Structure formats: C-alpha cells, structure tokens
Length: 217
Image 1: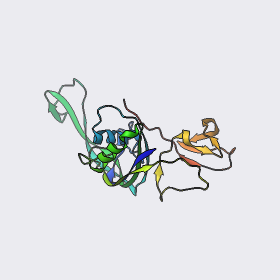
Image 2: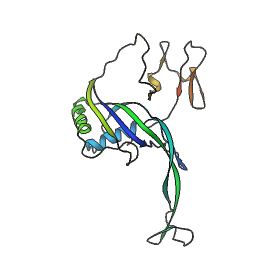
Image 3: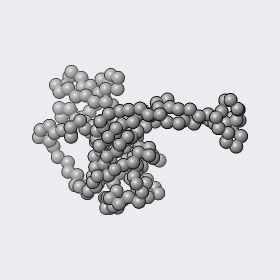
C-alpha cells in the first residue's frame, strides 16, 4: 500500500474546536477532516474521495489574539445606538473576541487514498498546488517542505519506538493494544478527558482522549 508523505510548517495557526465560541480554542493538531478537506480542494475533487490520514506534529507555544466578530439576528431591524452596521435596513453588531493560536507548528502527514490509482494525482497536487495551500483557517498558510510517495508496511515492533522529540499524534482507540489485548473501554478509566490504564495491567499508559471529525458529507 502506498501513501503520500508530506512535511510542512505553519507560523500561527488555529484548528478550531467546533463548540468553542467566546474563545476560539484550537486542537493540538489538525483534525482528519481538515486535512481531507485541504486535499480535496488542492485536487479539485467535486465529490468525496475516501482516504485515510495520519498526522503527527508539534508546536512551540500558544498565544491569544483578537479578531473582529459580527453578530446579527435574522430579521432584526437596524437600531441606532444598538447596532454598529446597517445592512439594507438590518442591524449588525460589531465587537472583538479572542482566538487561540499555535506557534511554529511542524507537521508530518500521511495520506492513503482508498483508490490507490489516485496516489500519483494527490502527490502532484501537493507537489505543485494550483493555489497557496492553507490548513485550518483560510489565512493559515501551509509551507510544504517536502512531498514524497512512500510504502506503508505493517510490522510487529520488537522494541519500543518513539516519535520525534515532543511530537504529538492522533491514534484511534481501535488501534491501541496493551499487553497483547485490544482496547476495551470497560478496562479503562476516563478522568478529566485523560485515558488512564487500570491497575489490572502492568504497563501504565496515558493520553488525552479527543472526539474529532474525519468525514463530512
């Protein structure tokens, strides 16, 4: 099985959590759906193309920035002193809010299309994109450092292997194995969104459990 491997950098980026409003919080890495959406845009796909995605990366720090927010209710007439903007007789309020930004993001992304015949066209679209790619918000430009086609091989590890220093990665729970046992929710405890292995197992493992999107239809 072949995949497209992409190494990329971003300066200040926000991968917004859908239910964050007063402060636009960010996921630590781009969700699968965000990456898949970028691929579809760069390839100019007009229908959904099934694919698998792996993402790992790290950032240096977090910061907050201000942005202009506009609020309006459908059908609310403009009232001077209440609304800031008059749009064809309807009132729009203007204010400021806060967005969380990740600084100096480094990403390693693997893309595996279900139809392996599409590997070359996805590679070409990332290698020579028709527009400057963005990942996250529209203004979050993606600096692609390298793109290559690689082979994906499944093998059993004989010893522990580690990601790059301080790298994060999304790992679906169905792929987690402990002491030869498949993950079972009943065998673990969730405290403050943290996955902690119970004392019934000898090896301690921990990580943050997140609910992220993959497919949009």
